[in-house]
Length: 264
Ligand SMILES: NC(=O)c1ccc[n+]([C@@H]2O[C@H](COP(=O)([O-])OP(=O)(O)OC[C@H]3O[C@@H](n4cnc5c(N)ncnc54)[C@H](OP(=O)(O)O)[C@@H]3O)[C@@H](O)[C@H]2O)c1
Image (cartoon, rainbow, N blue to C red):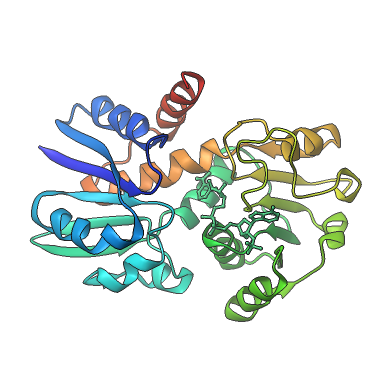
């Protein structure tokens, strides 16, 4: 029996249990996927329990960065990004991975979002780091903007990117909202409408609500858009593959997440 879970705080509204229960069921596997409330100070003890009795866990806010300290091995990608969102437990050893970055790229590909730069990443938190790293990896020119400029500058320096002012959005061909702006607030957007470019694409990592103001305004401007759900589904599917060797259908996982979201 596969024991899986997502750890984070707060975790009650996580869509991961719905997605991963779909994944288990669709592959005919016996297992469980729990949502386990884990504040930062409880992480070390929780990971000890994972070591004993779990195949693996996902990590979310606020644990992704801190987890690096407690694992036996961290993949070079997760190390470069500075964040772990997937832990595999084998014979009492814990292995850390980052599936946010490849999940983001797979979601773009699956959604037909062109990988054309310059790309402007709004936000230099954990998600912004993963997305900026992924876009740089595939060879795009990547710009980063953050409300607190020092954080954008630190990220730009670490990854060899350019920290820019918000106005440069007009010249970008791919915009990614990796800030929390819009989360739980359909009226909030990180980008004033007049700063959208004339062509290109926009992706919002926020998926609550699914259709954020940022995406609605991007679409009104004629840009190709993608919600945060495809990335969520892909990072989950890639995590599931790390635990089992099997890739569940990301579209099925996305649909399970959408239904859970609609049921809220
Ligand atoms: N779709 C997915 O699969 C997926 C995956 C990961 C994350 N996400 C979403 O991505 C978002 C960011 O997550 P995270 O892990 O990066 O969080 P985080 O590490 O806490 O970073 C938060 C970011 O939001 C910015 N921010 C917060 N309030 C702001 C405001 N009022 N105006 C402008 N910027 C503001 C912060 O800027 P400062 O540095 O100035 O504070 C920082 O860049 C969340 O909504 C999360 O749910 C989605």
